[in-house]
Image (cartoon, rainbow, N blue to C red; front, side, top):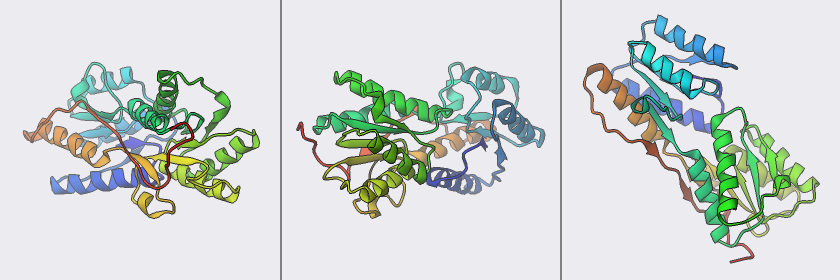
Length: 272
């Protein structure tokens, strides 16, 4: 497995389930770090292949879909790509449609009466970050709400960047009744900064995050979040690899949808 983003609750859950499920199948999970570029991701993949690993799971950040299709076709070892959709070898990829999930979450806020919705991006060198931003923009367009670029602030997936993004939005003098953060870590940082700035959640600003981390129901107010089915995605990935290796069960599922779990951090907006 290669990736540059090992920090954070989301990846802790992902790696926990990957290790547990490979152990259940009598296999050993070996990690290689793709570091900071496509070249280093290729080196990490080659390292695992040179070690004669039975199979490889790639969680890419920099490699293009075309490059990953080529890698899948080039090597004899079974290779699965997690969280990216391949074009030529779709059965070798398990992915969640982050764009559609974000579009649906923002649409639900709009249906609840919110029109001025701020957005905190993830790192925009991450495909997930780009897709979630695109889903936000598509939801506004779908409901004929003009895009206000000044309601978009950039984050880096961690709580501090979520807090900094809220400070930036407030310093611009922007008004908004809802805020969507591209992951729960940033949403939690955003809620703390809103509180410190005298802006009540959810009375003044409703907040939504992504990933539905374990702590989300237990903070005050409990955090509404889009649940990405990480456990199911890892299970499907490993099942496909086992099938390729020795005839394990193979149930093809093209995509895994996110689901907005509404909790106390969201209330109806002024246009309900």
